[in-house]
Amino acid sequence: MHIRQEIDDIRNKSIAEYYTDIAGDVLILRATQGFISDDDLILPLDAVTKMHNTIPASQHMAVEGTNHYSILFDPHDPRDKALSSFLQ
Image 1 (tube, rainbow, N blue to C red):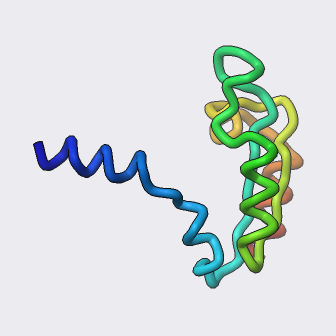
Image 2: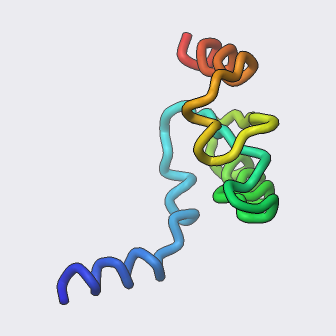
Image 3: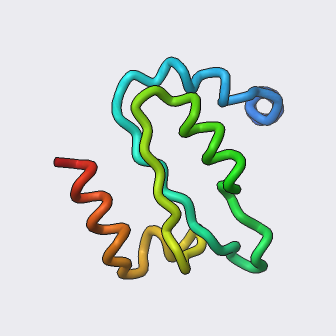
């Protein structure tokens, strides 16, 4: 039962209230395609906009032509350049 309660608590918590507490630089990468359909985006544009406007030192990039799997694992030169630039 304890684990079920933790899951329920997480589902009812707004993570956005902690955005202003983030002290470091943040690069937000957003896949532009859904995994199964075009509208099943894990990070929709309105969520990215809210994050970017609230996290003090954030940057964001739409990684065109990717979904929440391929954004991590498929070759993508613009994403790789953005990551390299961000990490320098």
